[in-house]
Image 1: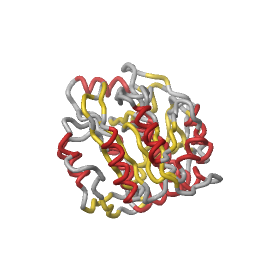
Image 2: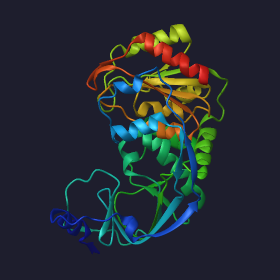
Image 3: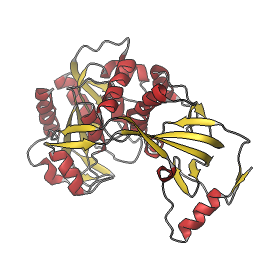
Image 4: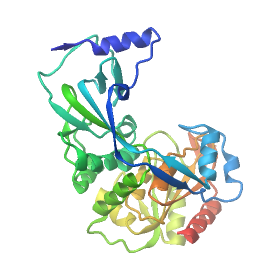
Length: 350
């Protein structure tokens, strides 16, 4: 069986004809109702938002509005999208003349030979979750809990079998998807799970319950989650010294995901009141294990302020704090006294 869909989609793009998302080809059903989400303001020192020189993934106006908070945000329902005759090729789904990227695409084959029959499947992943660990842990794994409940076909993923932290998290969450890289599906179900509606919030709470099972969640001052030079480059000067000061003067526990396994991290984060660190995916380790009413204190370079983690803390009913430094994303610094003062501000709220 041969499909020319990859080549035809590439040709449409080159001719300036936009390729629609596969949602345009789907039968869509609401599986969880929408609702309103209260958006609280960030916790920070006076004048902190004025230090922003650049933002990531959203405009400065959008980030400022979200950080300022104080309003209710309507959240859409969670949707199931049912498609027929779907090809999976090179991390891209094709349905008719539509497509959706789940992985970075390598090349544009004119055609491909699909397996004889891949049957029916349910997919729970997203492009952003396949790109950033934090989105996989805090979002795609929460969508898994939906698929686990409502799927009427085998649950699959295009991700390779997990290793390290991912393997541990999947085991603790009971995740056992089949791993596929190519196939033709008679029917496939995907989810639009972007709204922080009550159903998604309940699943985030269930994720925490499963992760911290068996660990002591007695409250304690907090954790500092080191980033180092991992991920996209955002080098925080004297990161270790800042963490050491918070440990010495405020009693926080220092975690290093480069060496600490998932059990060590979850055990430390289960009862943490505040989690601190250079903004990035490594902080998702903390927020998925921490309780509602706790706080995440993120440190940003002034030219790359990112509000993505605040979306996650809002839906988990956690506070979000920011400290913006000086320099640039390649190498930036923060004042230690300002870090201590911001921590104390958040500790009062927790």
